[in-house]
Image (cartoon, rainbow, N blue to C red; front, top):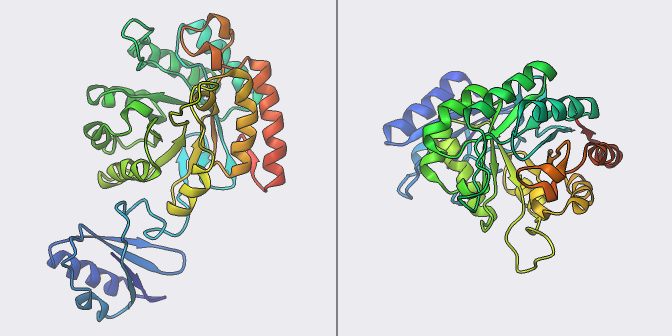
Length: 340
């Protein structure tokens, strides 16, 4: 339930609404806006007598939020959420940041080499996996904490913020010490104990859509983060499982405008995992920007043929350079600035 206050409602009137809601046994959250303040009532079990609130001084109207996700819904907050990351990178505004880097951190020379190249080519943030969830237990699993240390050195050398994945609750604190954005991968989108823990980490979160998840399930996963107090959430469409085998996944670009209609959260696209095929990444990156994505996440490796993971979908640096050139043209055409 949302309690919309009248324009110019005083702080005393807002606090009175909050007090009444709390006396009814529910949680209240005041949300000041540019035009007016709204107060959210959390935990509505259907027994709230809205007339108790409607008649309070300063109340304009009451809006019932019927969707299963509350705080991440567009009804809860009409204005777009802007997630700010260190270094002046923002998601959700007019800019379209590009996160780029290898699937895995393999060595100091590898991550330093690609980080410097990506910085020169206009990337906004550096991605790289220190802990890698792999389908096979015999596949490359990452360098662990050493990989995090190498990412931190790359940040010191280039100024690029770090995006890296956390796989389990035990490593949330460790990853949070190094990462500028903590990533939740597709396999963990519905790992609810992990979502709760990351919701308390105090860092911006990149939440990837599960490979078989509906949009409602993605937004409910984001709701877990909000419920723990973390409102710095960036959603990511990374492709869903399909019956066709010509691409690794089916990149659901229609999810971008759908999510932007349902939620105030920014949503980016990952065409690397969405296609799994190198020469399909750039066309789908172009399409994602045109569809309104608030950013991109692209895998780039200095030598994909020697990559320890996801080499087939990783771009060469010169291909990434061409991708940046093309999506900047599209960004300009729709009034957005790519790479900032």
